[in-house]
Length: 189
Image (cartoon, rainbow, N blue to C red; front, side, top):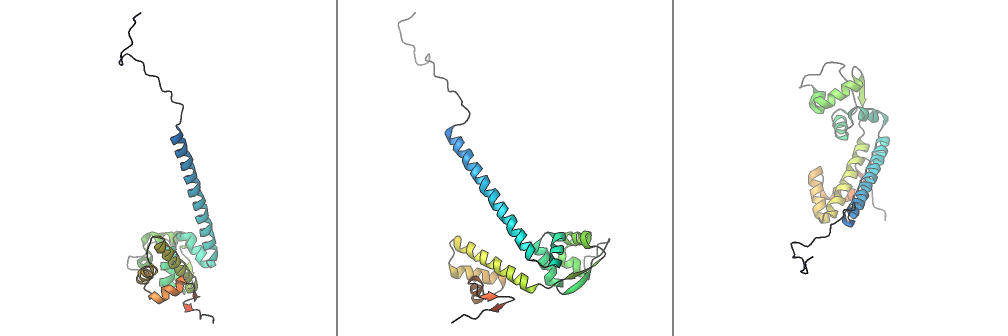
């Protein structure tokens, strides 16, 4: 045996034993689980809102929704043909210049044909429903603008331009001073 100390290259370094997870990865996993939980809760809340929204639709629009599954397409159909009865083709796609195909597009019309093909379909006007829906969307967009740091005036201006409304009308919608199909409520004295 030698009486000299081992050199630094001869020293044995202690082995690091991997015990599975470090504390930082455990915290990350817990954060990930919490984030997933939040996402699942938000998804469940959105699903519940969708169910409530669909339950407020008139029965005829619920059937149209069942065929299309797209509120934008339902709104297109109602705005173009609301209050009228349409003959939905059974088998053959109408030509591109046909009114129904021009408004709905090929894919949406195909969905209608699968669901209602060969029948007459009454499309209700539902002005009040879509006005209320539009007002709800304007209120949500307004809140989002304010949350993103926009001023109330800038949010009103942007929404007025987007929805082809006046600033005053957007302000009355945001302040819940509208009712029904576009009639302003008189302020109470």
